[in-house]
Length: 320
Image (cartoon, rainbow, N blue to C red):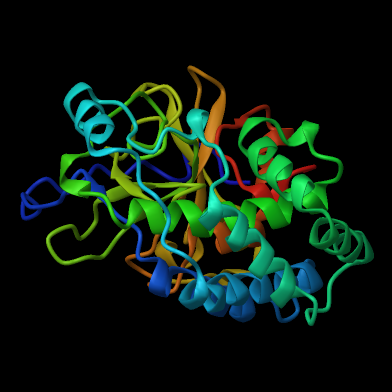
């Protein structure tokens, strides 16, 4: 594990990015297809290969079911205007009640998943949810309230996958330019926690860091070298499994460029003792915050052993 002295924080490049927006809406029509491709690319020879393949298939289904879903209902315009004006999340997850579109999303996802190879607990959960419509509504609500309330973790995976699609479709219909900060570490669109942060390579925002919502997929700008969980700029450092492996390798086998081994790092904060991963998407455009978060579970285990708590949330990593 590379220590704080080994990987120095890199400040944001201030010049040349005056047009970087605060918030960027998700694009559900391509989001889940790209995620499926990333899971597939990460799976070969990975210790979690079977699980990554399953999640890749689930992401593919998330993409494919969208064309046949009813349009989701946004909150009334009056409520949206109040949210924009007073800096509240317009898609408040705390007020979520499954509507026709949300229930249809989970139902279609379960129908498509019948042909997917999956672990036995997941297959049992799929069958149980497919047969019980009231249960489907309940797990959708509980997936946003408390994972411990759901009967099994497999139930939570399916419910969360459906909610990702539903909320991404809602978020895509909002005016992202009107979103404002609603609190430290909270998505300005739905109020949810982040899954990870990305240093992006977009035009007008090259090198800018965006935090990504675990639920709706909205991106919001957050200054680098600043804790996502508590906003502190003191005691922020970066830890990387790849950097540790590189230091242990023979001199001739080490990468010449440190960036080659620091694609995914844990940004740790000594003040709150929490961390959120930061991913170098500007170096590897295919990086997906959900897929690469699962694939770097080993980094979570190392950082947790060192005394930091995870401030991000990924429904596919519950139980770890």
